[in-house]
Image (cartoon, rainbow, N blue to C red; front, top):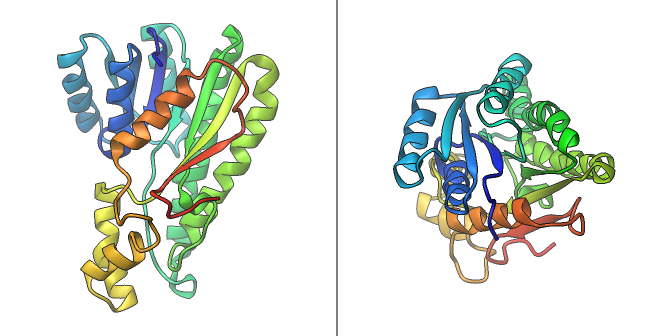
Length: 260
């Protein structure tokens, strides 16, 4: 599996899963735009990748909830590298609260980043993919695209919504050579997950150790976190897959947490 100078945009790529995917794409011979809300962090990530793979990465400032910033970021990538072959819509946050205490502003923020972000970035790159008759759209879902957990009403709703969006993209894009997939990770030890541990401990009235062992990893087959590298390999698999055979499909990587 390799990307042979294909151009990718990965959102939320200055750290965590996004950065792991960007690194893997560069290792596979691709060019990758590190799109992130924090431009300095995105530039630092791009510089680190370029140190090992000269010319493979560029930084792009992008608030995925802003149509203007999304369009400008995609335009900058196309100006630099001529096209977009792969989009990984990965930007995301987490806010936990019971439904009756979930602030409406937080609900809207969650859906805007996860769903609006996936829609706006997809909308911006599709014309370039259609023009060349090929492309891969990868949306970062979750086991919560298929399961539910307490305290995560907005997150679960958004991640379920990504499944529907990916399937529509697959139906519309298939005849034009563009495929769409969803990656559904279990708990990956990133800053996003680390932030949830004390929050859930407080809400559930249990220790942080119990949150990790019982809530996060209790349903896995081996008590292990899914790794950033695991998800990066899946992202490479979908980006490099040569046909529409798997379009519209999702793949769960969760150490058995979810087997749907």
